[in-house]
Length: 224
Ligand SMILES: C[S@@+](CC[C@H](N)C(=O)[O-])C[C@H]1O[C@@H](n2cnc3c(N)ncnc32)[C@H](O)[C@@H]1O
Image 1 (cartoon, rainbow, N blue to C red):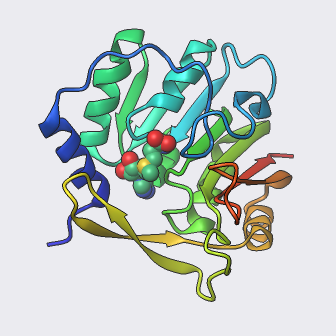
Image 2 (cartoon, rainbow, N blue to C red; image 1 turned 135 degrees about the horizontal axis):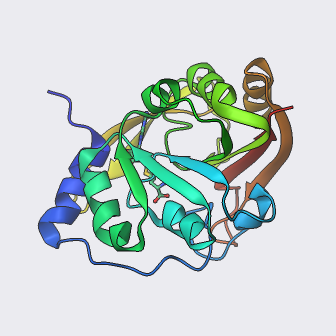
């Protein structure tokens, strides 16, 4: 039986301790280290009242930050355990979290969205043409898509194949395999264009700041 990495990760975290209520984070993080690169301002100013969906929200920090800015943000994650963690941390702030596959959620709902975000989330883990087309269909005119993924050049070499199998270390020391779409910035730009989106920014982020190679690729795009 194949065990989902994130279900296993969430189960271990939940077994350790129930998720504690947290305050909404003061900054949006696009990398796995705090304080590096831009924050939520790259999504546009005046996020209050904006309809935002986070794909692959995990424990919900980004969704909670956006709700703290006044946005109507919903966090979506296909791992039931991750959604339990997100609700445990931020349910008390009125944040909405939905247990669903990102593409299924985008396809079954109809309301046009102002912003879609993914932070090391479903974009990069699902087949790019399918998830980008689903995002494009749901974005309103001038709507913004922004996502961060592990940088394809993080080891110094861009992988020859678009699929890489990463090893993820779980807290109990077990290594789990994770398949990701590790494609270079130009290939992301082509995939976004094919989905009907215009690239507005490509950022190579170094986290930690003294890394030899960029660790995070942050891309912004918009619906014409
Ligand atoms: C590395 S975690 C990132 C969590 C969160 N964005 C953060 O920065 O803390 C990736 C998350 O994406 C979720 N995920 C992966 N593929 C997904 C999909 N197709 N639909 C919805 N969620 C997905 C996983 O369950 C996991 O919680």
